Each structure stands twice: as C-alpha cells, then as structure tokens.
Length: 288
Image (cartoon, rainbow, N blue to C red; front, side, top):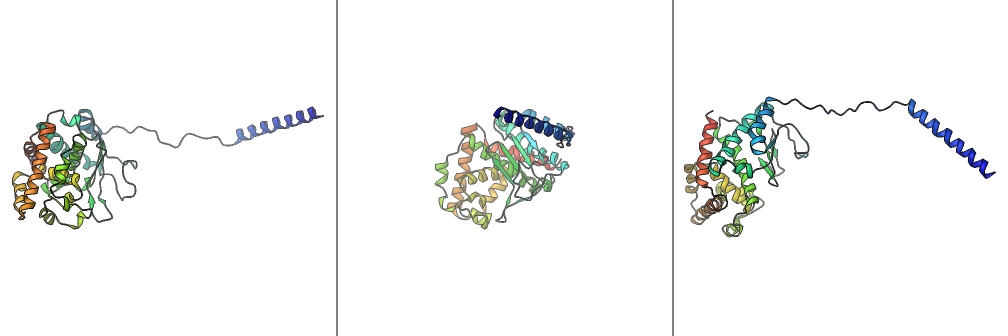
C-alpha cells in the first residue's frame, strides 16, 4: 500500500515538473542585454593625452564624467571638451616641464599623481569657500573650474597652476616628510579651522603666507612653497615688504628657508631655480 502511494506521488511530481518546464518554455525568454559595451573610438584629444601624459609619465587624465571619481553630493559637471587640452597644456608646461628641467627628466616620472580627474565647474563648500583641487593619497589629483580658465590671463593661470603646485607639494611630502617639529615651533598659536574668516593680509601679519596656510602645518608648508613657485622674486619680495610686524616677517623667512632646504636635501633641487623656470614657462603659456 505504501509503495503504491509513493509511486503515485512520484508520478504526480514528474508530471508537475514537466508542466513547469513547458510553462517556462512558453514564457518570454531574456533578450539581448541592454548594457552598452561599445568601445568608444579614440579621439584626437585622447591621443594627445596619451602622448603627453600617459606614455611618458604614466598619468591618466579623466575628462569624461565618471560618478565614481567625484563627490556625488556636490553640484559638479564635466569640463567642456575643448577646454581640456588648453588646461592640460598649462599643467604640462608649468608643472611637469619646470620640474623636469630643474629636477631631471625622470623626476615627475618617479614622483607624481597617477591620475588627474578634471571637473568643469566650481566645488563649493558649505562654509562658502571653494575647493580648487584635491590630492588623494598621492595617487589622484582632482582639478576644478577647468571651464573658467583664461589662458591669456596671468592671474587666472597663476590661480590654476597654484592648485597643481600646492597639491604636488603634498605628494612630495608623502614621499619625503619635511621637518614638522621645526615648522610647528614657528607659529603654533595661529592655526585654526576657521582660517577662511581671515584675510591674507591679516594672516601674513601673524607669519602665514595665506589665510589657508593657517589650517595646519601641512597646508602651511604647501602654501608657502606653492606661493613662492607661482610668484616672481619681485612679487614675493613685495609680499614680505607688506608685512610690518618684525616677528611675523622673520617667521615667514624661516618658513621659506625650511622649504628651500627641504628641496635641496631631499631632491637635490635648487628651489629658486625651480621658481624661475616656472615663471618663465608661465610667461610662455600666456603669450602663446
């Protein structure tokens, strides 16, 4: 009796499975994937980026939108395509070529970010300040406001390249730290997270080259180095001359001396020669 019942249920199960497969066979089957795996054709710009950055320096340049490379909580947009090459020519001429001339042809090949992420618009913070660039782990630098760069304006080019110079100093510091203890002793009371409520002039009166330099010793070092690199000797001398407080001026000069010694000791580089080369290349960029 039990055997007959088992045989009966087995037969019912087999019929049910057969009906299930038949029903599935009659249903609409999945069609081709809707994902686009088409490889985009390489453009003239892509080829230029490869020959100017990727092949010689192993630096990738991302200019097309990639939500995985930016902060999606910000109102950002990709750069206009025809703005990419002019901006990256500025980067190549003033940053890479200057370091290559003074530091050696392989300097940037050995120490550099491996990715540039380009953004067309402004990266506005809730405090009302603007972030012009971000260096992430020494491997990626994000540059903002590409669409607003006027290559014929020295002020625009200086502001733009200052971002590169500043972020690159951070990368150098990650490779070779500066004398943090000596630096921290110079103006310890002036650092503040509310740096943005102060002017550059007020900050210089306390021994800081810019207001942003007051955030911490690392930004202070990067700002000191990058401001010198983006200023002519006469322009930087004028900044120092504007500081009337003797202690503040002395501390600015001490910070400058630490930067100069840092480049010499760690990279065998004449920092003032690097500044002069960057200034020469800036003039060339603006006039062409």
